[in-house]
Length: 160
Image (cartoon, rainbow, N blue to C red; front, top):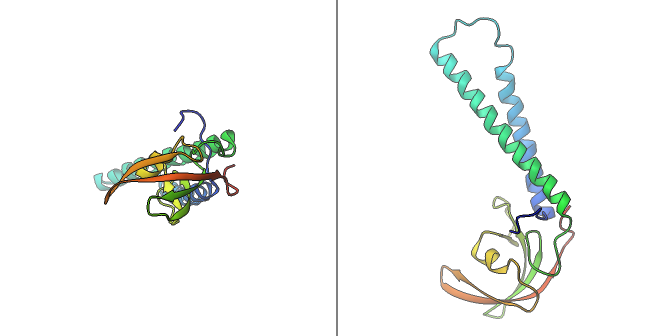
């Protein structure tokens, strides 16, 4: 990644928005259990430990929500993925050494169940980053080292 604002693909944006929605729902459920506890302080240690655990969970949820909101904002600032060089959010057509041609999208969300998604930190994703159409790449696979050629780079309705 470049260190600056990174584009975000439409697929990754949708996955992040789904996760945010789920986290906000979960946060509300946890927060409700912490409300109104100002009265009776006679609870035993188990109750106090449970309250502390829920407070810790609430803090974890808040951190993750802030992280995801920040990523969405960063993606909006970055704009659309470049069509000059492969980056996060790029749609890339690749010809593998066996002659097969496949179009993949370079993403950052590993949880997305999409056969065309390649994460930027996977061996193929790392090998593709920064390359241009016509470039040859080499990367490791479970079966050994292999090569591919970047056929084209485009954005299928991608970022922002």
